[in-house]
Image (cartoon, one colour):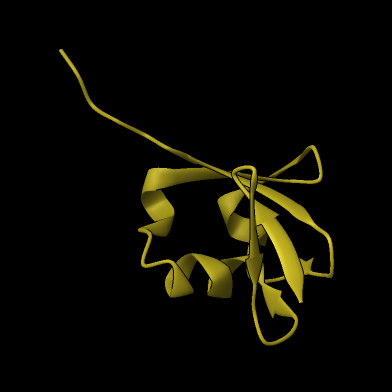
Length: 66
């Protein structure tokens, strides 16, 4: 299955949830914001949000500063 993640195409073996993708990418779910096909996906809905062929996923990482 082909996904576009932050503008870069990736291939993965099959459908998965957004939460599973974050785990695969070794990202801390509490430290990112997610958008799929221009729709913001709140953290509480990531497990239920299935990803499909051609989906565009944006993952925004929070960074502290001062």
